[in-house]
Length: 454
Ligand code: ADP
Ligand code: ASP
Ligand code: MG
Image 1 (cartoon, rainbow, N blue to C red):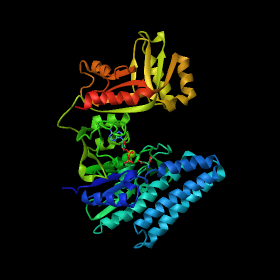
Image 2: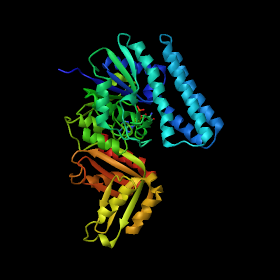
Image 3: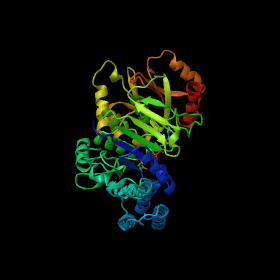
Image 4: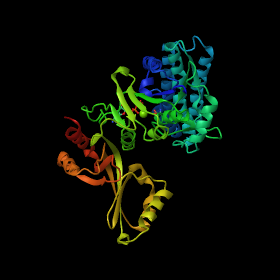
């Protein structure tokens, strides 16, 4: 029988300070972690990216102030963890990272330029710092184990799409076998970074904001892990974002397909692409709170005991609705092909879509609408109408597209809130529709009350 291999991931709030790190370290021990993936300390990635923007604009004082804040925050954690007392080399590593931060910030200020490649290099310092400090926290807790730091860039091979790099999964598997051949077979625990990767040419990349979940899943796939545990600041996946709806409650089990829909359609608790590698490798995923490790959480599995009609709901703000109309669509083929060719050329992804005889409507992230080429190309083909500031609401469950009367109950629950577009049918797990941006949260609360509070 092959050894079990447990991959645990801790987000920024689980790395917030020395105490949070020690608590997370204890979870690693209790849950027999073999590979631990960590995000930057809470708020640090935002600060690093702000340094890039401020530096680009030449705001010297503000840039220095932020660099100072990051240094102070991490030095304080180091101090609280007795960092470097047992291993002087690690102090050099910390100094080296902090001076790299200064050098990069000065470079950006000098050049008044921060390319996406430079931003990734800068952002990566967040994860490098937290992993270095967390190794120390874990060593204090897990004194019977050897805790090693793995620079994830030696295994997380990606393309060079800086800021949103795509992983090269075959290479990741090969490199993990090469660098971690005995993982799970001895008392060694590896600590590594989420979010960051490296191109074949040795340039640092990032997988997109919130990407540490995805990193952990890719690494879990790479070593064919037995389990992937995502430790965050909530006790699992809830029926909706607890910040929006205080009555949201944690879901004990959910299927991969439902959880994937939920993540893609706005539940920030998991990065949208996290579940794909876990599904490919059939690795069960657990989501729990590092603040209350004994409070349970959510298991994501292929099959669950129950299959409720509505299990959870999510919203995505800042959506645009593009409606394309032309009489040419009537009884014609090839029109949708032409439209999607344009979306493809402009590298724009569409979320929800509905069609009628002479028009097709689709939702996109509003940021896409600044792409003038897209609207110009579409206008050459047909009439284009664009609406902005909408919110996409998704109800996630089972057989949700085949249930007679559901739409009626939804409209009943929404009352006077106007629905802009409904998209139902493509997925048995998702029923979604658009409402005006300023009504999104209220709509979610009303639906939650009707369908998920009883
Ligand atoms: P981490 O830093 O650990 O990755 P995130 O902030 O990225 O944590 O994700 C956790 C947050 O996701 C929660 O604090 C919660 O507000 C939000 N969230 C959104 N939707 C849900 C949901 N359905 N269930 C639980 N949390 C959710
Ligand atoms: N630290 C990164 C971010 O803030 C990645 C992550 O937290 O998952 O986006
Ligand atoms: Mg996250």
